[in-house]
Amino acid sequence: MLSRVADSLYWLSRNVERAENNARLIAVKLTSRLENANPTEENNQNWYELIEIGGYEEIFDENYDRCDDRSVVDFLMFSLKNPNSILNAITVARENARAVREIIPNELWECINSFYLKLKSYSKSSWAMDEVNDFCETVKKESLFFQGIVEATMPRGDAYLFMEMGKHLERAEKTARILDVFYHKDLDQYQNKEIVEYHHWWSVLQSVSGHEAYIKMYRPLIKAKDVAEFFILNIDFPRSMIYCIQKVRNAFVALEEGEVEHYSEALANELEYLANDLIDFTIEEVLYQDAQAFLQSFQRRCSTVGHYITRTYYLGEVAIP
Image 1 (cartoon, helix red, strand yellow):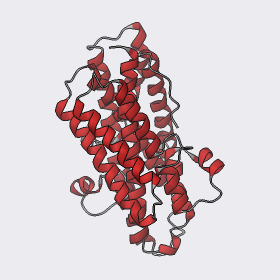
Image 2 (cartoon, rainbow, N blue to C red):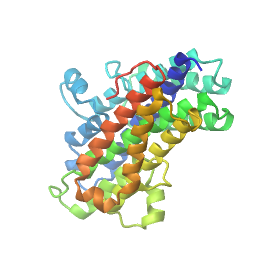
Image 3 (cartoon, rainbow, N blue to C red):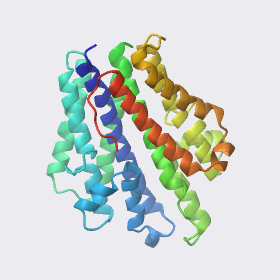
Image 4 (tube, helix red, strand yellow):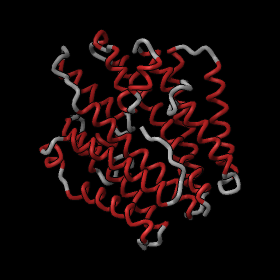
């Protein structure tokens, strides 16, 4: 496979996943605001958390005078100055899909093209906050439709494997960012702490569509330690860090047909070390050694894996926040 084709497939999948992640976070924040037991405490800092999860603080601060619900939503959904806004992510994904139309199924091209046109129609309108939830639902459904076409129609060859690596690496890093930002939030400052704490962890689980799966495993009581274990070490949940890294590793092994050559050795080693770190630790050991340090190290190593993927397969370097 040509490097330019692999590059387009990798970033096509990664950008669709990035757009969906933004939509999920916005939708959960809107719901949390409605259900918050202390609505007056849903302050601007809580909206800024979404900027921190994406790692967009510097870009946001340069372009917005204030942080409120509308500015954060505009930045994450439509801002052309945010390279990872939903609109920009799907624009890039569409251009990547256009470059490989002879490789991907026609249904997949029609899906991403329709997705892009819907977003453009939204961005040109004078949108209101009460329309944002419907917009987020559209993004999530279109992303799931995209993934369904990939799973149902694409042969499990190199094209599919590059898309798998892009999707799951993006997902792994974003899961770690979400947990990193929300795990250390000080909840002692709130009145009705127990109610606020429950809604806090409910929001965290909803941000990865994991609430129902969590309840089936841990029952209704939501505890910070159990949420961390679910996010980091649950091998069966498709958005956990260990599940995603295993999928990236499996795709790499399939691409290389189980062999490690000199050009792929650095990538193979980094994936092995990262996967083994997750397998070897219990959640008690992770929390004992400093969860924040562990999560931030994981994010840096995901970026390193991304760099090795681009270097190994001569893909175009794209800055990852």
